[in-house]
Length: 52
Image 1 (cartoon, rainbow, N blue to C red):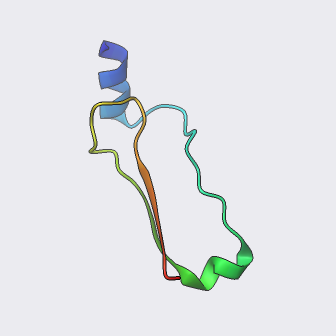
Image 2 (cartoon, helix red, strand yellow; image 1 turned 180 degrees about the horizontal axis):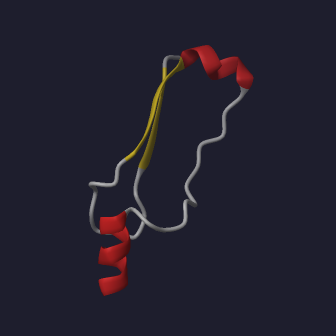
Image 3 (cartoon, one colour; image 1 turned 120 degrees about the vertical axis):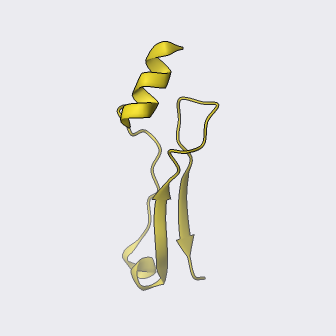
């Protein structure tokens, strides 16, 4: 557990969660975020906002 806490605190670790999009959606992209403040897992939720 200690390694998880240190990695989260230092924002260090593998980036394994991704969004894949197409060029057709480029002009509709609003934002993309990594939520490092969410605790309880060794993963950080990722969010992609698109105006569809």
